[in-house]
Image 1 (cartoon, one colour):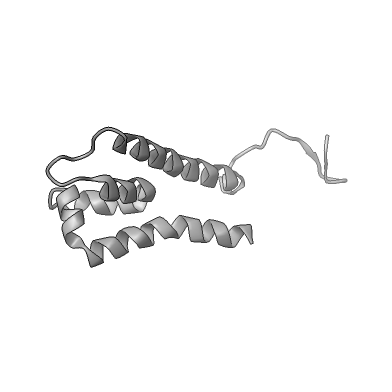
Image 2: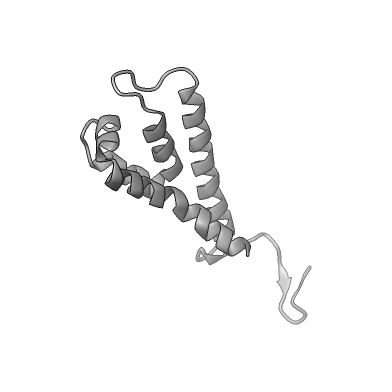
Length: 110
């Protein structure tokens, strides 16, 4: 069950970003000044931050006041997601040593 939640949580902001970009392209064009490069990079690497930026952006004004708090929180969520993923997959890194020595005959840590 936690695996399904993680899968859902990791794809939800990307799907929301793409859905908003397709349904309301003017919002993305206004927020990113007509560029397609930064939204694509944002959707790949910082999906929550991109989603919050698009939702908080006010045309002609930009971000102001408490909008920056939400952007900061979205950055923390994205960094937390990346760090959790790296921590979870640390055993898949070739040459990684967990720091524990295991006795091969009994398979218990020494």
